[in-house]
Image (cartoon, rainbow, N blue to C red; front, side, top):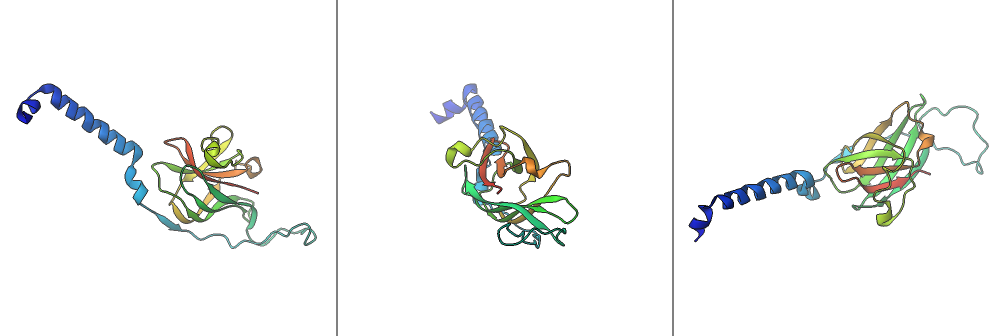
Length: 180
């Protein structure tokens, strides 16, 4: 019976179609990434604390080192995500985003986005970050550890309010941090 089944052309066409479908599915979803981790350990800025207005009078001179302008903790969206994002102003006036202690899932096409969207909890926040203004800072270097992403000079960080670990392939946020 099996010999007669494989003697038919329709059987071979079905096998080829199923094989091609499986190959495309594996490429698109990359399920092995559920079991892979890449840890990055870049040097973070040694930052100067900014004084609160209630604790000290305003400083009239520029600080000697990098300053944390805003910071936020990651919340989970599509995949469990933890860590801190901070927006740092360097002494030369440039900015960078630092991901501190990031811990998320690996994915097929993850990017770091600076966005103007509010961070929403739960599934309501999964797909909002491409609705407004966003700037891609680069591919996520690793799904764990400390990472630094320069903010392009033409970008005004004051126009943005959050950082998203964005899966470009599926247009979904793995996790996001509101910058406050």
